[in-house]
Image (cartoon, rainbow, N blue to C red; front, side, top):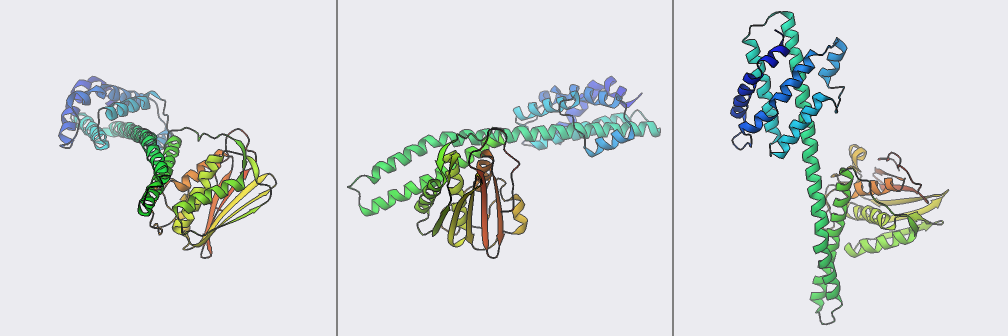
Length: 384
């Protein structure tokens, strides 16, 4: 009897042993129950037996053993996805999922050995079984990770969205208090601190919303209208100076800086670059904006310790930072500022890059004056 036939013939006994063994392996705080363990066992065993009956040449075996070729929509992987969905919905941990498959492997091989198989053919069957169990385990774990990450992103997105309303109330209340002539100078300073802190929180929440939107596969929404890039830079500088009163920012404009962009998004990009330069740099921050051949180029430069060369390739990835600490005394962001800059540049069919050396750090953004509709180009992560 082949191992595939053995699995089909002894499926109920395998399920019984698997369930008992998996429960024994599970941790004390595990959410595994006997009923839930048995739910998908029959489908997984049937899929493994069917996979083992398919003809396989040495090249296909090598490809499978390396995990080089995936078929996410195959019947085999569909069983793995359903298993992962069920385990996520029942609150299983990733350790629970791995324990199940460890138990399955041990159960099948132990009962198979009890039938006293021998010879090269039996050895090959065991190899095929291990390949199949590894494949369904990898696909189940992969899908489990995808589902849990998506749930976290949805939670973060809903939380950030819902936080905007009470934060808006704080900002509006602060604005009303600042116009109250009866406040003492100390009270005015206190309200100003509240306003600045609330604005900083608003920036972080906006960044988190963009991050979760992109993680969930939604394109960053943009609305192109006539804009003056010079005015966008000046407004961004005023906003950063309100949060960093001691910041020294120089603005240099050249050429016709009019175009069609999303002014709010570009303002966010410039604010993020300036805030990054003020927090991590030293000395004055220089902002240069120029237009040439239908393109606007923005350069934000500052002095200070260079960004490590090994950090440049991932500088615009989420949850990374350009420097080791926030020197300004203001609370740092959540590591999304430069990632948001890349998202905004891509949404405008532009590119962003960075260079850094002992002479200073330069962030360069290149944007078409009139972005065309369609997919943005592949982003440029380094180089200015």
